[in-house]
Length: 358
Image (cartoon, rainbow, N blue to C red; front, side, top):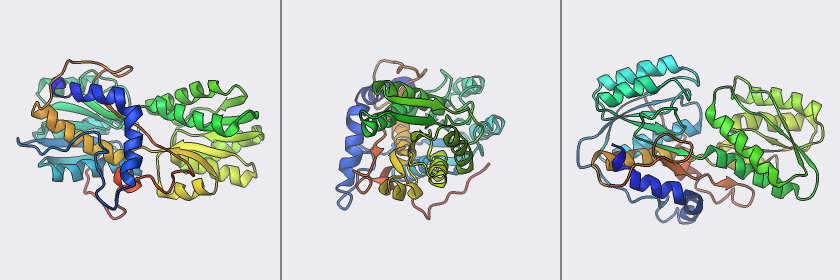
């Protein structure tokens, strides 16, 4: 099934950084006319052959994963694709639960299983069994350590960290500035990649000093508040705080406010609660994670792969064991906080809900 996706994937892997952010921002400027739900990445097609997807995601507790689920469900309705079931593992690390869900989805006779993996490793044997049974596998949102994936739709996590580092370098200028970083939970490959990219990006501003916190077990606001409070006490000269995801970032912003230290937070994943913090300078920068767009692209490229609408040589993108479509991540600051297309690409409708099985 890979050959049906490779040509398009190659295009994304090479042009995403130059095109997608511009497309996201430009399309929002004409939202009143006709928003481009696919951000100019690909023309929509409608399935002409029966196509059934089964989906298992980490959770639906944030707008990133909820956005992916919404994007898949809505695009499937538009594109003559059946979604047999959307299940959730419940949390990162719940691999056993997700294995059971994969078996259930297989029993429903799906053509592809969309996997938002609860962990990076451990899936390869089960995914191989799916491939042997003629069922395709699509990696959703985050990478999974398996060659038995037909293609993935994700984002460059290293580039997220790099982009946030550039914002800090620009804001700090020639002044010396202390930065603390909250790494996120153990075993989360995406969080590690974001921190690695952030650390690499800070090398461009040698007057910035980085202090990294300990790897923790949670992603909640309370975790960010507790860890940032402790680190701020030990590093009162801190000017910026990095977190790999916004719940930790909201906690870090609260810690800075409570401590009286004027430290600005940079983080990832858009939530509605964070937008006012950008306007009042408690958040310096926030990268988008266009989950709705990812969900739509999963459906669109499943159709193309299933119907062999595109041909191309098999290839591997750097650092990924299977063909991958990368969406880029717009950096949201005070300059564009009022113009980015949140409701088109990142934030599902407030009143949208989905009957799920866990």
